Length: 405
Image (tube, rainbow, N blue to C red; front, side, top):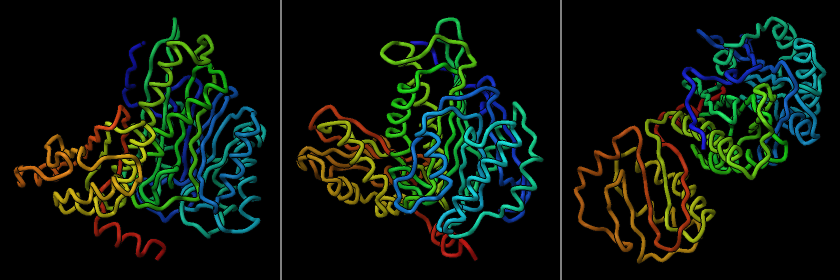
């Protein structure tokens, strides 16, 4: 398998043929360095794959993009806004999403059905279309505009989230770039998050779609901040073939390398979302091993990472391991309590389902780290799974109690 390398200062525009830009239009409150509309563009058609929110209340921006992706055509760009979710606004939401695509298409010189739309922000507020009409034509697209695009999609995030990796297939260098946003309303089955992945690889469409589904299940569907599932979740993978490689279609080493590289990009972005949870101070990584299947292990890990009592125990530096067992048990996977072992940052605190002698202060110190690893061994099989979350703090409650006021 080819070596996969992290691209220094890599962004969503690192792959060949991609450019991006952003602008402040006034959708969000004003602030230094703020942007609220972003454009991502490929200089040639892209095959596209996507996954979307499972919430029954869904933004028309998602509806428009999902229809485009499922239609099987190619796309040339994405327009994304922050500060307004374009959700729960009636028929105007659909019309506004369509107009956003048309405005971006006119700017890019392509057809409206070649542009995907994404929105994030407050639910129940109509898009300020006058501002969008005025400002989208002013966006300057640049090959190094990935950071501007990343800033344009932020809401309560404290920092931008992007990465790129590269690897060789035959004589061709392939690059995968990615950008995401998300800090609250995050729960498995997608979250209030947007993620855009780009590559210059030539990929067979069915393989690309399956690879994205598999990777999303291992990454974005394994994060939790607050247990709430958004109306606007969108992950898109765009492939423009500019690298000139032999087509990647599955079943060989090149395909496995591509999938591994895509996993690295998505996992980095997913962990950064969890780390940046509103008010969070600690990244929680929950790993379950020795389950009867990988699916069981992922389900149990999600249960631990999303437990409010586990989150508050980590925040309080409280080695209350009973909460970990509770969260494990409520996942309803097959287990035998007498076989369970629990570790916090590699310090074993439970054996055979009951506490063992351990240095309490050592565990408190471990819980004080920026990254806390909770590992549970079930001794039931070979299944493994990991999920990511964050601690729950007073800041989260304060922030969200006055979100719109």
